[in-house]
Image (cartoon, rainbow, N blue to C red):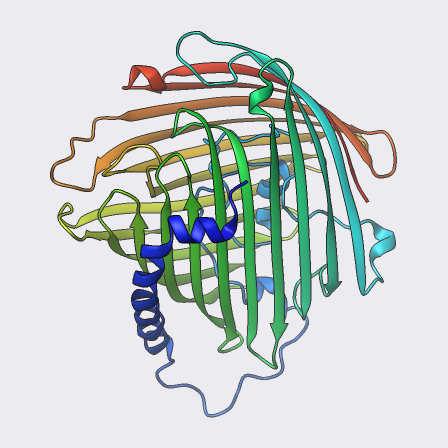
Length: 466
């Protein structure tokens, strides 16, 4: 595993010096922009418990790809949290399918009155993949074993996440290949989420770290990557119907053998309660991207936001806007890209849940110099609870990746069409122990022959989350 100091010294040195000049300008510009012009002479009345909930102050955010495949827990969370970085299904990390994810889980009833707690996390699984290197020719299969162990520490109002709370989580995963033992790896994930609430203002810090090994679709082979994501949010209920938000974001995608990228953003916006269950809003984003072997880029995004929440029945949250990209140092002329994200969670029946996800955004290529790609995709999934212990789920998704040049000397011709199909059945045979069996078919059709491939994966997993 590459050390963090080495990572900073080799790849982030130049980005760090430029960020030292760029990021303060972004912060200052958006702080000035976010200052309210004119307000009531008196502060809003004391907020009731319903108005004081997370839903009333957390801003709607666009769906952005991440480095983990979507899980049922992530998609189901649309009913309870705003659309924050719901993942892009095109990334193929290990452990596959039903491995433990760095996500919040439902608490058992006996934990309702605890001020704090520590939860151990243990999982083990086996997967057979008939194309572990996602190649077009010379396809080889292998048995892959994963052993996961970690813990979660929760303090304060970690159930409702409305008042002060702190949540820490760490997960270590040992990945072992039956025949190709040189691909064995030790992956790590960590997360921090905390909030401090003043009388009206809430401040949140959200930070994640991932060290991952495995086949990555945009790279087209096995690769190692270290990912950092940090967010600092300020949430303020300006009135009983209007919420203001301001956020600073930083992310680093470090690929030792490929192309690394670094992003710095500031955003501000508001949400307005149009009807008791409906909110609308507006968001502005100013960002700076430093991508290895590509021109630096400034970008601005204007998003309209909307949400509809009917507790226990339906939740829909969406963001629609335009992104303006300006490349510097010999890059392409300004590019304007429509972007959007839509997430929905609908309870068809008492034990049947339907999930929908759609998105479009611009991403930096980790494998091709001087190119980005526009990702447009979606997923549909359904869960059926046959009993309290037995759950069947099925999901399918598609993504189109159209590569675009960011330098005048580059000719971008690559287009990928990725499809997957995932049925899964899980059974809880003890109080804290769950087993699952799943299958996944994946296929990538690319204009580059070497990036066209398909594979099948079968997975058996047993996990325990106390």
